[in-house]
Amino acid sequence: LNGDGQADLSYGQRSLAYEYAAEAWRTHTWFGTGPGHTYATGAFTLDTPLLTVAKFGLIGTAILVIFLWTLLACCLRTGRRFGIRPAHTTIRALTCVMVAFLPFGTPVEDKGFAFAIALVVTAIGAASARGFEDLVNQQDADAHPGQMPSIDRKSSSPAAAGSAK
Image 1 (cartoon, helix red, strand yellow):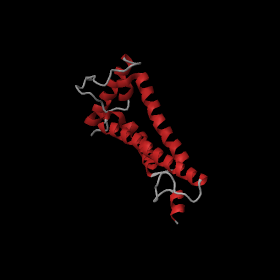
Image 2 (cartoon, rainbow, N blue to C red; image 1 turned 30 degrees about the vertical axis):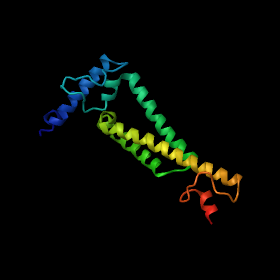
Image 3 (spheres, rainbow, N blue to C red; image 1 turned 90 degrees about the vertical axis):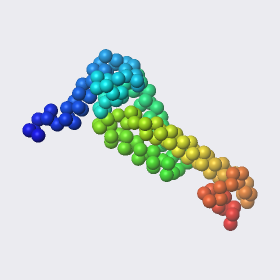
Image 4 (tube, one colour; image 1 turned 180 degrees about the vertical axis):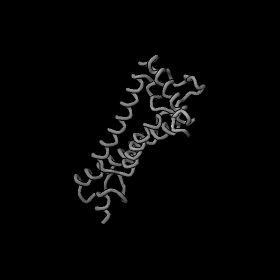
């Protein structure tokens, strides 16, 4: 290397990827090029953080950000309402990893992203359902002391643990 960035093949490819993505975004600002667009490299993807706005445009990127923000808000809300569970910690860690990797490329381009989102939705639903069961058990135990709760979760419910003694 002679100290010039252009001498590095990886740098040169990334510079081109930035140029292609910026041009695609300039020409398709609002709706993007779409997920099936082939770029000048002959590929469907580019190694640049600009790929999300190039592919989905401002409107699609806004919808994606709102969707991800809603998932995070649901996670935080269920954590406050029903208590922090391992799923909440995992979702927070996934969010931190996604934000940390943004400068290196778009996380929505990877197939694993769809699976991660599906797992996040499942985890939020499971934490909500489990928290709701615990809430019903506690309310039932408060309303009818000395009786078994309507949903029997002996290992985790405070009401069930108290009635088992």
